[in-house]
Structure formats: structure tokens, C-alpha cells
Image 1 (spheres, rainbow, N blue to C red):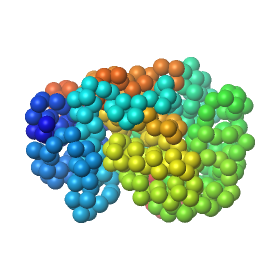
Image 2: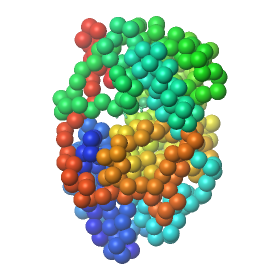
Image 3: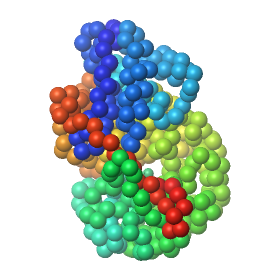
Image 4: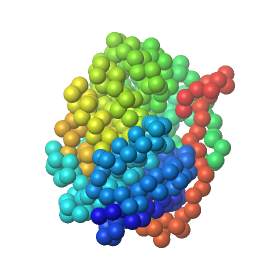
Amino acid sequence: MKIADARVIVTCPGRNFVTLKLVTDDGVTGVGDATLVGREIAVASYLTEHVVPLLIGREADRIEDTWQYLYRGAYWRRGPVTMSAIAAVDTALWDIKGKVAGLPVYQLLGGRSRDGVTVYGHANAPTVDGLLAEMAHHLDLGYRAIRVQCGVPGLADTYGVTQDGAAHEPTGAAVPAETVWSSERYLTHVPSVFAQVRSEFGPEVKLLHDVHHRLTPIEAARLGKALEPYALTWLEDPVPAELQEGFRLIRQHTTTPLAVGEVFNTVWDCQQLITEQLIDYVRATVVHAGGITHLRRIFDLAHLYHVRSGSHGTTTLSPVCLAAALHLDVSIPNFGLQEYLPHTEATDAVFPHSYRFADGCLHPSEEPGLGVDIDEELAARHPYRPASLPVNRLEDCTLHNW
Ligand code: KDG
Ligand code: MG
């Protein structure tokens, strides 16, 4: 069974998604997500120009060999563009293998380790009162784990916060919007937010918070310490992680669990964080970390060091990525949590799928393969629109991390 066709599909049903569809000479199809938000066309052209010509005629059942061929064979390794492209190929090949075997992909990964995949949703609001209402709403919907983000007095915009509580995934014009940040204002405000959330909703609900790479290690250590009374499940991306040993300093000062990794592309990006037990959750996901094959390698390393998975799962990733992530989530021994923001109806229509949400959990498809597809005709009716993530400046205009 050889790969006979490979199509790169860019579509924008509200936001941009890049999808690879492989077709075998027997007519079996497989899909993979290749979306890198704000840099979609870079991955699409890497696939079209450099990967697709290598795929035609290759054996579709050789997943590991194809992964190594694309990774080692390029000479230039790693990076989000390369790894998202490899991820798309890998995911599509797992989809094909599942369809050929007549089994959902999680069965090929060893079968279920749990009944469902516990997910966390996002509660956010500019004010604490609004946030408490959003928390109540999410609990009503059945979520048992909730990411909490609140406006900061004195800042017009804060990461993760919208006026109406909608999911915060801002991609606006081609030229990025600019936001203004103050770590001092933020650090003063956040502990009081969690005090009010815990006092209103009690100890059971799992609470998470995303710092979005904005602090220094010593600032993050101070925040982690201040949040200890509120028993967070995790504090996410407290600092940028290029300097992996930066987490050592945070770790020395606080027992608040740490999560990191949504921007990681390979196991080498988190090798030190994992082997030195500097983190508790690794947030890499299928599309940006080389597909099911490589992400499983990351999670296997993490398992040896008491680190659990906590995959990124916002609406910037397509339903193809989420479908694939669920097959891994349900099968690995060291699953922690899965992020979940429901896609819009327009996106769901382009990507028909059969995973489902119930009682705070997502359940992977039972169909052979991944249980997700792309409606190519509908996708063609939503042409690509250039859009960027914001950039962020300090109050004195210095460029900071968004
Ligand atoms: O596109 C980038 C977003 O998906 C990212 O900012 C979301 O940090 C994020 C999260 O934890 O969901
Ligand atoms: Mg995050």
C-alpha cells in the first residue's frame, strides 16, 4: 500500500487551519493537522515544496521510517515549521493504519488506560465578579478542571481575558495588535483572584492559571508561593522556557505544580525539565511536537520522571489535532489533563468528527482511524486570510513576551 496522493489544504472557517490529506493507492485516506497559528503558510509551503514530493510512492505503513526519513533526511532539524509538517504526515499515517486495521488509533497505541479524557476549560473575565459567573457556568457545563484568567486593574488587556468570557484566541489583522503589560500590577492582583475563587467554589474543582511566559524566574517563584494556599493544579508557562534551568530557581521556592510546553517541538526542548523533575506537566501536543510518534516519545520520557501530560488544545489547533491527541490521552499511563475549547460550528462543519464531550471528559472516536476528516469542498469556500497573534510591550514600550 503506497501513498498515491498528498493534498495540502489551507482553510479559514473563522481562523486558519492547515491540513494534510494522504491517499493510498488502495484509496484509503488519512488526515493530519499542520496548523501553526500566524505562520500557517510557512508550514503549507514546507509541506508542498519539500515533503509531498518525497511521500508519493512511499509505503504508507512505515510510520517510524517515514518519521526518521523526514526528520534526519532534511539535515536541518527541529523547529516549529519542520515539526508541524512532520506531525501532519505522521498523524495521517496513523489514521491510515487504523483504518486499514479496522481499529481506532488508541487501540494501536495499546488500548485504553482510562474511561475518558478529563479536560479543562477556560473561565475568564475582566472583573472578579464576571470571573465567578464564568466559573459557575463552566461547572454547570460539567467541567471539573478550569483555567482561571482575570483582568488586572490598570491594564487595558490581559492575556486570556475577553470582555464577554469567550475563549481568548486573538488573531486579528496581518500586522499584530499590540498589548501593554506590567508584571508588578499582575503580581499584586492575581493572588486575591484565586482567594475569591477558592472561597466561592471550595477545594474540589481543579484550578489552573497561565502566566503565558511573562515573568522572570524569581517573580514566578514569588507568584507560585503566593498561590500555594489555593492549591492550583498547575501554574503554566511562568517563564519562557528557552532557559530550562530557569525552572530550577522557581522549583526551589514553591510547591505550586508547574506546566510548560505548548511551544515545544521535540523531546530535546524538555529533556532537562523532565529529567531534573523541574516540571509536573508537559504541554506539548500532536501538531507542534512531531505527531503521535514523537509526542508519545516525550510522554514516555516524562513517565519515567513523574511528569504527566497536559496537552495544549485551544481552537488554534484543528479538530484533527484534537482527535489525534485524544487517542494518545486515553492510552498513555501518565495522562494528566487535556485542554479543550470547543471549536465553532463553522470549524466543526469543515472537520466532521466523532469525539464527544460528556461529564467533564472528552471521549475519542470509536471509528477506525482517528475518526475525523476534512470536507474539502466546504474548506475551499473559506479561503485563507492572513492573521497574526498579538505582540506585547511593557508600559515603557519595551517589547516583552506575549
Ligand atoms: O495560539 C497560541 C494560543 O493557542 C496560546 O496562546 C494559548 O497559551 C495558550 C493556552 O494555554 O491555551
Ligand atoms: Mg498556555
